[in-house]
Image (cartoon, one colour):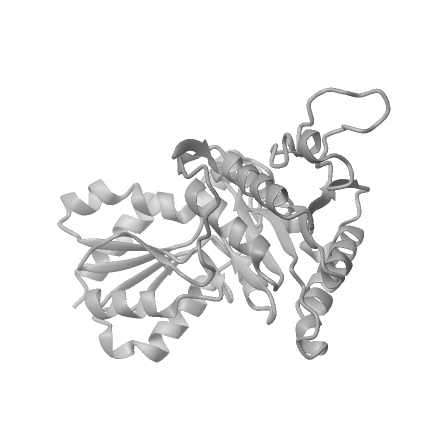
Length: 337
């Protein structure tokens, strides 16, 4: 085990798989950070957040393919490469740019296996940054994971810590279907223990982060850490809280939620996507349909308001669900009569 950041875990996963399989390559904007351009021979920055740092030096321009600013071209080239047997990792720098290349993902990559009667696989990973909290403004801070999860044929994961970031990315690269790998930019510096060797975290399996008896909290991405920060407050208020990290949004581990709600009778969901048709509201609907008899209180879903992510720091801080909201909602649910 080595202490690594979320960012380092992602780079480690790509390095491991590129060394293991020569069919794996990375394609995207600014991923070589200027290497190979003219006389520049400095260290490759690896994009605006350093998520491909060092890869150009190890694997060169044939496997670290820096592209023009054209998300449509990146996704089209990656989808075609996957169809002919390569394993591309396409970097969509910010998930906010999804609209530019929607057709290549939604109408092409996600449907190839179905249209061709499973005669063609599409082993494509789309790495993309999501989330608010670090001042990137309304056009670089969105969390459209609920849109991704709504698309049949796509798999969607969102790790909340370095261990899962490495393991889920390795699983995604080895999978034969297109996977959208959501990297929360506010978590990139978070550190944790990460094995040096290759390992897989299975797609479609959630994880109980903290066991409890009174309340089930399902937290997604950055919200996992915020939920965990409430642990002392929960203890002071004698609330035994079970915290679940789904990790994989599609496929989704329904049973881990049902089993927990059967035990606690209460469900609080914390989700950073927009409130209308959010991923959290889908979980609430699912539990209402399949585990209604287990509920002792109405389900509560905490999301940001239905507005773009604010640019002003004070407004952005108020935009996201916070510990105070979580604690108040938890108290109300446990005391519900």
